Length: 396
Image (cartoon, rainbow, N blue to C red):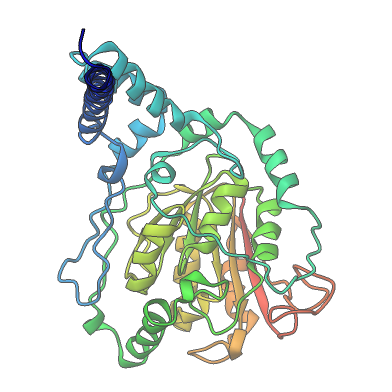
C-alpha cells in the first residue's frame, strides 16, 4: 500500500484529469456546434447585411444611381416561409439539428416584436442598431387623443402580420438619380453643408430635433394623416424629405406600413440606413419621380420640405405625386410657408389651384395653426405659426 500522502496525490490527479476531460469535451462539442451554426449562416440568401446593402451616400459620389437591393430578393425574403424552405433546401447536406436551428431563426421573420405592429421583415431583422426618438418631446396636444399602445392594438387587428409583410410591393429604387453635391446650386449646397454638420458633428440624428434647429412634434402630424388615410399594415409610404428616418421608424412600428425615404442630404440618409426602419435613398432632390410606376404608393408624406420645390415646378410635381398614388391614397405637403416658405418666400395657397382643378383628386389647404388640421390649441412651433398644409386624396 502506498503511503497516505501518495494516495492523496493520486486521488487529486484523478480528479484533475476527470475535470480536464470534461472541459475538453464541453468546449469541443459546443465549439463544433457554434462553428456549424455560424459559418453556414454567413452565406444564407437574404439574411444579415447581404440584403441590407446600403446605397452609396457620401458626398462627391461619382455614381449616378443607387445600388439598392434587388426587388426580387426583398420580395422573396419578405415572405418568410419561402425563405425557410429555400434555406433548408440549400443546406440539406447539413446535420439535421443545424438545419432545424437555422430554420427556427428564419421563422423569427414571422414574429411580431414588442412595440411593432407587423411581422419582422429582413430590413428590421438586419438592422444592427435601431435608434428611436420621442416625436412629441414638447407634449403637443393633438386633436386625436390615443396612445401608442392603443394604436398598436388597433393595427394588429387590421390583418395578419405575415400577410401584410408578404403583400408589400417594393418599387425599383435603383433607377433613382443620385446627385453629385458639386452640381448643386450654391444656396442649396450651403444648406446641405449645414445639415451635414448637424448630423455628423452635432449628433442631430440622435436627438428629437433631427436635422432641424428645434424639434417638431411630428407624432400628431403623422397620426392625423395615418387616421385620415388610413395607413394600413403592408401599405407603402413615400417619406419625401425623410431626414434621419425618425418618422419612417414611427410609421413602420405603429402602423405596419413599409416606408421608402428620400432626402437630399447624404449624411442623413447614411445614418437612416443604419438606424431607422425603411429603405432610404439619397442624396436626391426627389422632384424627379419618373422611377416610380403609376399607382405604386399608398401614401405620400412630406413635412417642412415641399417648400424647397421651385414654385414654377410645383404643379408638375403635384401631378407626379398624384400619378404615383394608388386610388384613395393620400398625400401631405406639410408646413407650407414655414419660416416664411424658404428658400423662395411665401407660397400663396392659390398656387395649388392647378391641382384642385384635376378631376381625379380632392385637394384642400387646411390651416396648421391652432384650430386647424392637427390641434385646437397653439402650443408648439407648428400651431403657433401661420402655415397651411396641402392635403390630397386621389379619387381613382
